[in-house]
Image: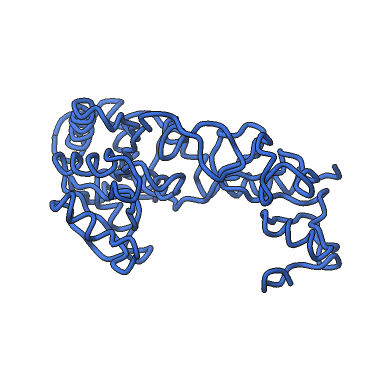
Amino acid sequence: TFKGKKYPTVSSYEPHRVVYTDYNGVHAGKVTGALPPPDKTWLLDTFGTDGTVVHHDFFGRISPLTEYPLHRFLTLVPGYSGRNTFLGVAAVAGSSDRNSLPPRRWQCVLWSKVHPWLAESNGFPAYHWKLLREYTKYCKVIATVDSKDTYKTAELIRSCCPDVEIREVQSPKDFQELLLGSAVYVGVGEPLIAPSCFEALSLGTHVVQPRFPEPRQLKNKPITQNWTSQHPFLEQVPEPFAFTVDPLDFEALASTFRRLRHAFDSIYTEERPVSFADKALREFYMSGEYPGREEFSISGFLKRVAGTVTKTRTL
């Protein structure tokens, strides 16, 4: 045991061809004398590690972590740390056999269930809450929040943006239905890397996220590369499926929402011949097809898991 938890022993690793663990598994193995065997181990590491952070007891590039080459670290963000291997997550799949448009309303859903960053007193920049307030000018915004969270998110939202409709946290099924019935999923800059944005895209819901006013290095992470937005891979998803906006440029934000409303209305309210561009939008609304979807699809995720198995060789 290590810190009150049970961890595998040396003998428990022996019959297995591939081992998946994390930093805790490695440190526990060092203490208990049962280090995960480097020749068949992959480390799950959300943000990635580029080997530049050395002086840190937990994730520094020091023994025993140096036993594991950087390409054996599995990350959730494609292309962010090129020295690691992208694993990603399996976002819910849209329905490929749907032959009609799901009913949608021109409304937005707020990304995340807790929002301490809406309070400047918590040390966060004001653009978070100001951006949310701007969103409410262009569409109805629905927030599903945990009413019992210690950050008092519901109070923070009511204080800065009273027009936001606050609902209790939804079940996974109900949340999918909410996304499927909405036009846009909006972020205010936090939380980082949360994969629900790809769940929204896979259900045919546009995503809007802010680009950071200044690129920033993440604190207490084993990587020194700058972070540029709420989810860097969204920056690679083209418009009009996803938009990465300047949170300080409200005129540009207004233009973004005009484009979004035009795209939405071109499919849901206008009766006219369907153009090539409209066909792409229609496919997006119907089945969640968008450029780059494979990166966060269930099939893409399973292919990458299979790839780690086939690539596991003696180091």
